[in-house]
Image (cartoon, rainbow, N blue to C red; front, side, top):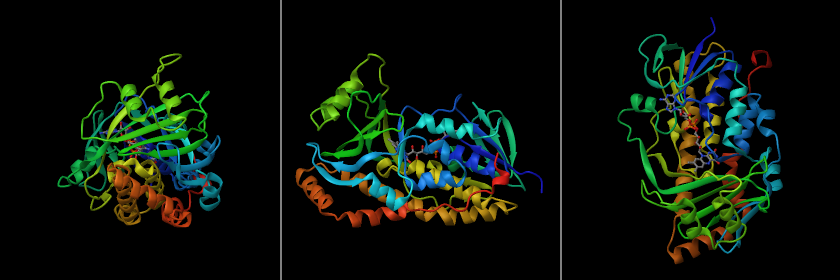
Length: 395
Ligand SMILES: Cc1cc2nc3c(=O)[nH]c(=O)nc-3n(C[C@H](O)[C@H](O)[C@H](O)COP(=O)(O)OP(=O)(O)OC[C@H]3O[C@@H](n4cnc5c(N)ncnc54)[C@H](O)[C@@H]3O)c2cc1C
């Protein structure tokens, strides 16, 4: 059998990991990315132990494990600074292996792109559809048709290919929340521990990145399309009186000197219901295209990475493509559906705003023994990847 060709729609986290994993399994790969450049938008991302293990299994450990893991404690606080729950990162790492790392998205995208053979990524090329009737699939793109033995739809939460393959699926639904994200220079702001602070229907998160900068995010209950006129003023109004170092971080966010900080603001969406399958014939859907979830567990990208590693593993050798993709659905659908549901439930708890409900929630979080929380996380963070590719086929 000659070298088989995989076309990946989308050069985000999931698409690039799939491209690396498939090329290291001996596939010729073309990634079509509609944007003119590969870019990790200006925000951080937490790579949990399950994602780090998945990356390591395809030989990407050293690229993304550089720098210090999250230090100190990881936990949940109230706006006056009281800790509701707190876990030392060393306890987390002894339980789950590699400790979580928080990186800038741009760093991750660059590391993934650098791991690909030259010429794999075609920028400014949009995938518009797929014709999968014959022995190979034909991928329609803005730059012409491409023949493919397998197509990986990694085209994000508004996936064109999902819409084509599952026309009756209801698509996305608004999650009742919107969020802000920004990356700040760390200098002078003491924020070594990662923490999320829950108020009444609002949250503020602080995550030190491995490069010394600080990733901050905030959420608030909101309907679709709500855009504050001035993000800094809105964030200060909501969070300016919360515990240290939040006021100092907001102050840095508002300064234009030496450089203004970009603040991203997005509504949160998730798939309205799980897809019946993550494949159709020779097309596999992965990441947000397959299971867009709310960001409450910080697992959307981690699950995209797991998907990519699993689908490449199942497509290794001379695997029959449709059979391998049916096995991929079996391996991934249940797990990602559970994690999406859990993420939705966390969002519901975090959005509580009635004072009595908030007190009851906080009491319950404080009273939950650490062993119970850890057990609940075991299935998510303790995931083991399939065996990686043999070294001989590595690029
Ligand atoms: C506020 C927030 C915080 C988050 N924090 C975390 C976190 O800490 N940890 C975590 O694991 N996850 C996190 N997530 C989730 C994570 O960002 C997503 O799950 C992840 O980016 C999904 O990756 P993907 O490759 O499937 O899709 P995307 O990253 O959306 O990539 C899709 C790519 O496809 C391209 N594309 C789209 N349509 C086409 C087309 N027709 N043709 C060609 N190219 C196309 C796009 O330009 C894009 O580059 C967070 C999400 C949000 C909103």
